[in-house]
Image (cartoon, rainbow, N blue to C red):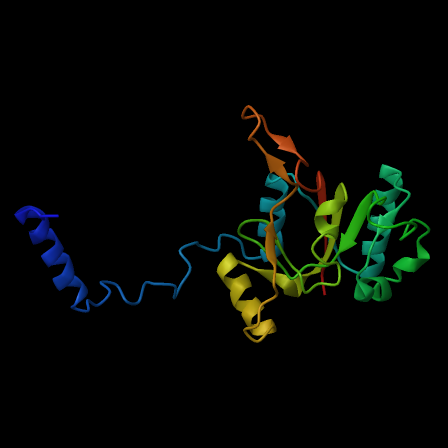
Length: 211
């Protein structure tokens, strides 16, 4: 196949360009700082604002007792009879076994699930979950309601900060699955109509404990 002079000229210029290294025009601008401005002094406020914007329910708690009182009030208002939790640290720290609605069945029959999380991203109102958590991959998306118990030290500003902290926590050996969930599951694929809870929980609650 004969190559035209014009195409040969273009290929020659490409070959010459590839053979010569070129420095980045702005070497100090790539990944060294966030392009987003921290508009809020408190990450709690920023997360609550963004999470609520995405139809998430946010409950700030100043103590363990307050968290448990809020949890009990929520369960009573919703008339839930079976909530599943398979995170030993949460079961032990908050003594969740004392509640009659805890782990009466399994996750296939539960009305809600309680899990922990890796981090909360304030700028986007996002929960960071991973396969390394005791709750596993299925529980946070299987039940119709997902309740997350998190701590203020888990708040980060941006996704970049979350990934950096995950690398530090797991010493570079990241979990096999990391997911970013922002509020309830939703889709608008069907006739451009927003449907909530189509691929996961229809309601998501975050109980944030101030340490």
